[in-house]
Amino acid sequence: MKILSAAQTRAADAYTIAQEPISSIDLMERASGAVADWLKQKYSPEVPFYFFCGPGNNGGDGMAVARLLHHDGYDVQVFLVETGQNQSADFSQNLERLPQAIPVTNVQTTSDLPAVPLKAVIVDGLFGTGLSRPLEGIYAEVVEYLNQHQGTVVSIDIPSGLFTDAPTPAQTAVIKADYTLTFEQPKLAFLLPASGSYAGEWHVLPIGLHPEFLAQVETPHQLLTHGLIENVLRPRSRFSHKGTFGHALLVGGSYGKMGAITMSAHAALRAGLGLLTVQVPTTGYTILQTAVPEAMVLTDAHEQHLSQFPEDLSKYQCLGIGPGLGQAEDSRLAMESLFRQKLPPLILDADALNLLASDRLLRQNLPANSILTPHPKEFERLTGPATDDFHRLQLLQSFCAEHDCYVILKGAHTCIGTPTEEFFFNTTGNPGMATGGTGDVLTGILTALRAQGYSPLETCQLGVYLHGLAGDIAAEVEGEASLIASDLYKYLGAAFRKIHLNQK
Image (cartoon, rainbow, N blue to C red):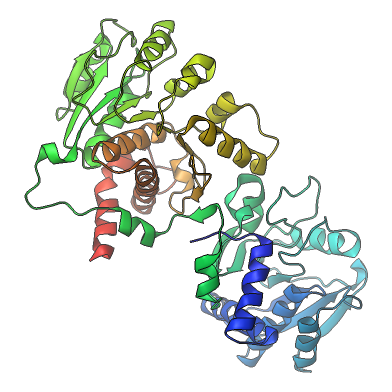
């Protein structure tokens, strides 16, 4: 699913109006009908609705939804906030269409605002994606007033005051929605930490924008969907064998951190890998042989941390480095020596990334098509600090292009950066995964997939999606608060099964 800018969204509307053809007011009616249907599925007619509408098309949407709910027996009230000037044509037409039975209040000052009952649902139709400057005056005051409401707030298309394609200035009045009902595609702002917190739980409502426009429009931002992943995941042949699914080497672990490489090994095996070898310091030999009997174990010459890599890497289809590795100088020198060799595909995580960040020569010699999996702090060590979430995407784009690599920037909507300057945002996962070790599990999954012959991009897409999906299944069973990293590989089989079922 493509993620469009505000300008592209307006162009999609215009193209649909011209090519379907359909009038602007009828397209608005279609969008409003989708919102009304969603609200009717969630709320009974006993719930009162308070609609706050601005002077543009977002306000027109709000009035149209209010009318549709009223026709189905819902108790609705409409509050028009400073709408005397600059009304859009579709706003004016929807104002004329409002039945006289719907109470309408003109809000000029805060004294005109109602006391909203706790059980009421506030519908925010003040401003949409066309906003280009912070809200001021009565609009900002109304937003601050509505944000004090302890009940439910639903925003139409985007929370009023939120910028779509740029950082929203600090101290700006922005609606804090519980739900955002957006049209056709999500907004980029929903997927980033600072701005996404305003959108609450967002839902994409199809409104029939012209498929030809959506197919042709170019955007670097895309959403990982279940349909895309179904096409990436390959079925296993009846006549395959363990050699068919690759042999991977995982390297990591140090004294007191053997759990990380152990979880990574479990995840790699659960992700369909044919053969797994794990290299650990001598102190980890018994741990790995006991905890992961399916894996073969190599021991480093050093007792407590990595000091060298195997001389012959030709038998491995992927090399994953980092979980529990530590940052000993021996380990840095070993990586420096490693990068001078001909290597299998590379996955770097955790302390491997920290060693990379601390050594400019290592970064310069990073093999092409490597996959890096930093969390935001680790990414910051690689690129320097970002001023905001949008700037972080620019840094991600530059880093991937400069080093010809793929970066999985972990977060609520994990973002995959690519050398071709495309971004893919994940749609699986939950807050229960914010616990130690989940990144180690991801490293194991990625290492296994890359060893099985998936391309770097396919590995990133499938690995990130499966990782989050396993977390979602685990959260349903264990609860978010009780989720631990080992639950992810425990439910990884169920995640695969869910995709395979849909493939059939």
